Amino acid sequence: MALRGQVVLVNFWATSCASCVQKMPALVQLQADYAPRGFTTLAVAVQWDAPANVAHFVEARRLPLPVAIDNTGAVARSFGGVNATPTSFLLDRRGALVRRIDGSFDVAALRAQLEMLLEEV
Image 1 (tube, rainbow, N blue to C red):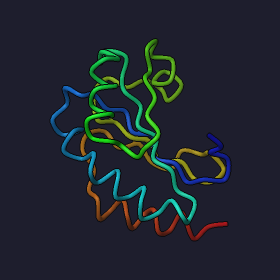
Image 2 (image 1 turned 60 degrees about the horizontal axis):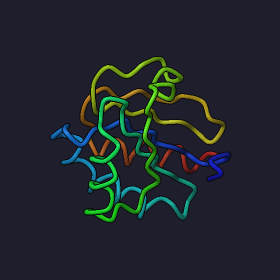
Image 3 (image 1 turned 180 degrees about the vertical axis):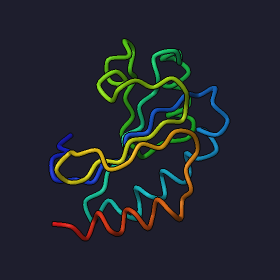
């Protein structure tokens, strides 16, 4: 998957995280609404989540998002560490970190920020 030139939301989540599961439909909707303009949501299951649980969740909900499993925690470490879920990182088209969101996110505020980032060339 080529993410270069995309605005990317990297969302660390777990199947056991109630707010993660609650926000998943919002992530799916963001992907549907903004993908044509150069936005991608990448859902990264944290290392303490069992891969079988993640696979079942993705299949049962037919998630139309790219999903990765961070088995070793290396992906989380590359973002400076993730100690709780959800934790999200918003990256601009150059791959620079724009915002770290610890905990649940406000969908309207995120949409407003995405609108601004997607206008940038």
